[in-house]
Length: 299
Figure 1 (cartoon, rainbow, N blue to C red):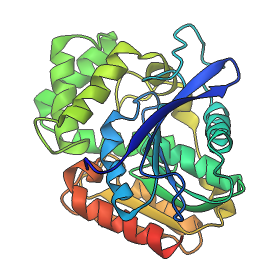
Figure 2: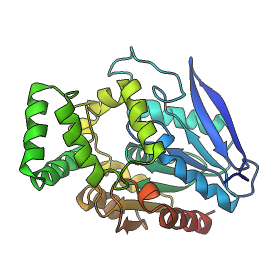
Figure 3: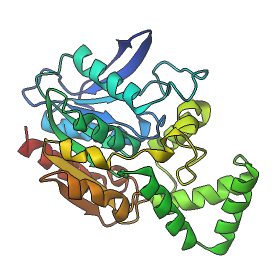
Figure 4: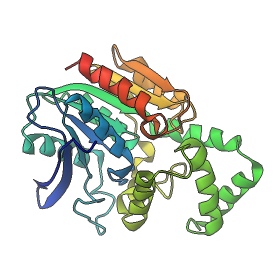
């Protein structure tokens, strides 16, 4: 990776700024790919490995969505500010700032995949493909499947989660310990977590506004503004080649993901057998090959 150039910059977005990083040559003949991180508010760190897609001569653009990471932090903004439309607009602004309207790919992971579906359903000019990685098609599906997964966990884990959620004591060490037990099975099965994954969790802890407002205290207790989010009625509008990714042990279970396959014409779904929510970490090389081959076939 030492031979791949990286440049960083900041895109003006109204009164705010979006931090971005380009790996590879933006002047390449291959269309670049924009990487949309999850959370919301998780920052780019944990999806860093997607920079490996630049080994094939393609520019890879990571960025931190507004409110997290290296972009403008807005801890005082309320729930009415943090909407999917805001992040669609931010992506559109970044594409235009970098002059890539002539053609580009989009990959979104978790919330980023939800955002990619929102974006793709609007049929923006220049999008060549979508990759929707580890994402639910509705939060109702996500929550119901999280409850099903919880029902299969050891009773002591369930009891700890239920006790502290009822009391609202999310920062209690007992609750945090139970949460990490779940994460090690359904979020990232590479334990201890690699540095880039740990960096993202630490970033959310420092800048929790977006995550807590839109999602909630953790991955499986959704009480934020996204709790009623549902893209299923809009999926038929997506008209570009679409790759769907999930892990066999993913918190984004097959039931969460199936509507993408059912409603996006010609879409392809790949399940990574040894992964949970982060195949790009858990089965890194296979994930890069799968995505890279898909991009190459649709340049």
